[in-house]
Length: 444
Image 1 (cartoon, helix red, strand yellow):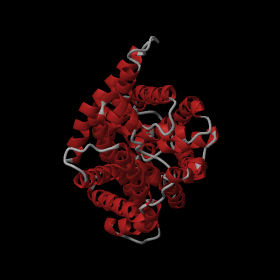
Image 2 (spheres, one colour):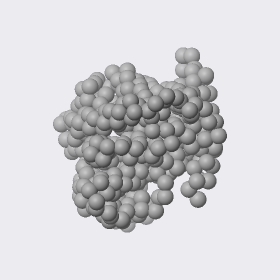
Image 3 (cartoon, helix red, strand yellow):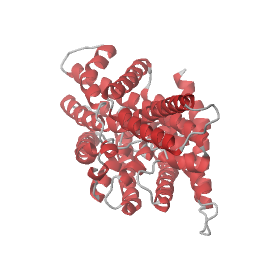
């Protein structure tokens, strides 16, 4: 079975030396994979739809995210196989064609998320320099970020993030605390404060895609589970981790949007009035996203590597068989020793592909150039995130997990969660159709 997504390449050569995480490390890893760019864009779309309506919309999205993650974990627990990943489950239940479609969707969403991260880092750099009277163009800021982002994109081992995710989470929390401190100061200066914006149904589908991207960790569910010492603890750990991330997202968005109101910026950190606090918060959150960037890039890189790897296998195997056939009679069948030879050759090439630094450097360099090129031309971050979340977030976070769970357990005698299936599919279909239409209207 092909193993795609986040997979520690050191396991391929030293399977007995893999690093296993504790439940606490997995908890922080999973929180960090869900607290990305969406949480700091959520306040502006919260203000657009209204405070009460945003809560009403967020609840089914959060529920769908928790249940879809649990569906994937339940299948992995039932299979009880090491290194089982999202794409493996899709191939097992829906077939190879859908597995290839999944690969393409994963690459597109993760590239989209990395583009969003890069846009934030670029705008944060420009804003920070502006505070000290240095003006730089978007292109100049993008080029400066190359110095930091490019080296991080070449990190190859997931266990590197067991400790850094914790510190990245703390950096994000510190940035959130600065925002809340600024909100507290603003509230004390506002006379006769009132919630003037509660419900605005018209802007519903400006909100949904961004909210889905506050639950962007579906790709890391199974890899983080597999990295644990006790994999069967992860279902509980994942639920607690997701609920923590959701509470942070919705609490921060409600407080900030009700405080800044019409002054809420597309990135909420830009709404902070004190220039020193704004710069500090931007630096802290940039550190947090920088520690997440390579974690999000891992799956896309490994999918591309695996595609190249498979093509190499087929090419090498075909020519080895052809050479062996030419040496014998035309009707001679390939014997067992030849098959063993091809199998050994395949294994050798497997190690070569994943350990070939030049190949990996080339793949990651091409992805980074693509990400930088698109990031330069994206006009509006919140609408871009809404588009990514509406299309790929809905498909990958909600639709696929429900479908594979239905198919995998179709012969099981246990009670099927039909109501849960229905809620998740309704949320995802509405997001795909209406959320995509709304975001395209603003982007085009």
